[in-house]
Amino acid sequence: MTFTRELIEKFRHHLMEEEKSSATLEKYIRGVTVFFVWLTGHELDKMAVLRYKEHLAVNYAPASVNSVLSSLNSFFSYNEWHSLKVKMLKIQRQIFAERNKELTRAEYERLLNAAKHRKNKRLYFLMQTICASGIRVSELKA
Image (tube, rainbow, N blue to C red):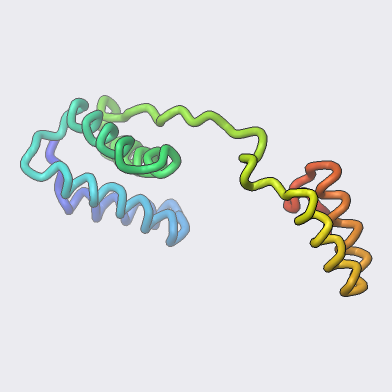
């Protein structure tokens, strides 16, 4: 397996043909290129990919590591190097917000008072609904 800049460029064209967004294209090419630079002088094999995964895991958040691994796995699939693909890091979903991200009673009352002071009944009742039910803002209808 020979890893070259030409292969990265072919991969870029493939992503464009797949109509990937410019942000996705940039992210994938950046992830593959950084790996290419990191790998310089070493053989491309599964152990090298696993060492890189470990390097990422030590230096970055799990979601960032998985983003890079997704880029690499896509590149490996494109080149039919399926034996190089690696598993993503397992990320435990957080069901509840951290305590320091929760509103205190005083903060909640300040928000309600601000809405009431601005005579914004909709915001006032919306804040009460959100805080009482735990519904996400994204789940609300306009």
